[in-house]
Image (tube, rainbow, N blue to C red):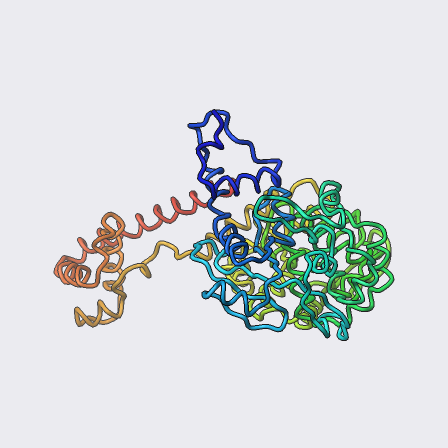
Length: 523
């Protein structure tokens, strides 16, 4: 018996939609074996289905449109949902009382009861055409249209110019479905016209190629190469937002290289271009540009944070300015400090948030830390932790790993890096010492009315002896009482307890150090 017969009328509409869209959706053969995935997908479409249904009831057309259709076809969960309709904004507000209209582009935000952040507000936009993009970003005139076709014509890329009705029927006027299948980013209509209308579309094209793993269609690529200078008209904040999306993609390194290939990189991160063709020394098999890009690739493969990825990309950006000599013995003294300053200027130019920028700059500045087991002291490791911040230590190690793999070495985290992590954990944690007590030497002298001297140390050591066995005794009230009792003991008895406490502290500290060694597989 078919699973479909167990569905409500609403679920049947949703099933029709999914059947047309997702090649990955496989219904269970057994009608009684409904899967969690099935229910999740059905539930995720209820808000959309209700909006389309209400539009139809009011006598209007309604389609989900754009990137959400593309994502559904690809079997991905849409990051946001857009609906297009021939209903005007004032009509939409009557149909959906729980809505708001705060723009000049015909987009009404319809509120839903969904707990899913991507479905809490659905943007419903009236069919429209656009013209006269005077600032290379925003249309000078927006006119409402009567036909879906007119609305789809204004969109950027064929993979985004797709609309789907409540029955799952797709309207594809520009071959978007085939381009998704072929993994192609292609402009709608004339690519040069699309980029002259909105220059940010050039970066969006690169972003889609990087995030979706697609190739750029040749005419679209050529149009970007021809009109790359238009990107100068776009605000740095919008460029930054697109850059972050590229960096957050699995193939960010391909996106950065595509920015170079299209000549867009000179308006985004021109500092990186200085490394092209700059040879390195005997420790590297790639030039500076290739090395930075391969370091980013490693960070992408490991799915590290955007901050680590950007630091990996920028870590050697200062090498061209610091290079001395040629060939295998060339040097780059101070390149990490130069690179940190260059990184700071680049991130400031792109209006990166202060906290994020400061972290990336630190990672670049201190990525070249020197460390060899047995040669570096605990005090130097403490200085490194103080400079980078304890919270950034692990990310600094990740940047160093990316640097190593980007240099062509086979091992990301060799023994000496693991030993450094051991040392950092050792010096950054609170050691087992009298500082752990809720009662200090001054407290003891004041409580017992005694002067500073060996007796105070013996009492503290004796208290440590007991607290290490019974941590629950580490309260000021309990320790004060016990200190008064210890004060009444003979000097010999107190010395014995104090000696036991010092010995126990040493043993417990050794145990903790051994645990950290085991964590990082070091001796």
